[in-house]
Length: 405
Image (cartoon, rainbow, N blue to C red; front, side, top):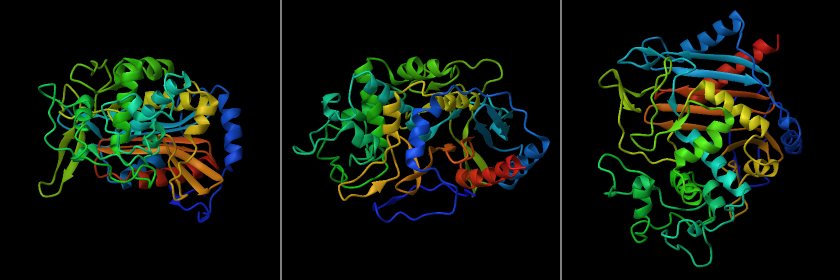
């Protein structure tokens, strides 16, 4: 039984095998080109009382109750919405419960949408993943005369670019918040912010890569990142409530029944949940950089995102295949990261899942497609200390037991 997701970053010939049912890579590619092109429709969720009770118990054991921040859970298989339910509170002050309509900051799961947006432009030949990033962002320094940083280097996290979170005293154009353009300007100061390592020398996860990817999307499309995602991803996929928090006026007014969750961190000394991130009207944040994060959505729209991925609505089959191809560094190591997606392997030829996790200021999120069981699990939480991987493992065991009966 598949018990835990794991991404490997090991030399080509030293992948360790695990005890679980696996899908060989060539079979996965056949599914990509054939089976996944078949339209998939989700039915209304009618989980059995036994499954609901079992999931309720798993959530209770994770420490979540009705009085604190919690989690929204989605489990989806082809043609069947296995489970969808919210637990805990979206906003402690307002006492609003979490439901499938509650909006969450996706944190780094946003990177899967950023990558998709950029690859849409690649499919349209408006850019190439093999472009030098300075072709689209010429103000960036030329770090090397022999090894330009390519777009694919950023999406693979092998660029070596400095981490923008380390930039200090960043001037801002707007009186109340910073955005991508503010940080892009700082990159001109090459002496203060050199490469962390030579491009391609190693894999190192870095939010700068996807912040700059969003900036490239804006330059090439001549639209804001949020508008591009709305036009090219949210609307085509039917994600009608999703948005990008890239400015104070970019957060739409929620219709009845929809609420933006507030992220919370547990402060042990104070013995309380402290609000640490949110969107208007509850909170107004200052760091509104997007691409590495910034997407807000809910379970209803994440189901539609999963359907769009399964049905290949947004990318050409060859491009989607490229997204699930792991990167390599110069020393020959294969990394468990494609173009914006974590890849989960047992050995170089056995891909059993893909997805992404996110963590930002009280929000913890996870999107995981388990290929062996052809099952997707989405976890959206505003509880900063939750272990989403542990919760997923327990949920998967419960679902496996339920579906096998």
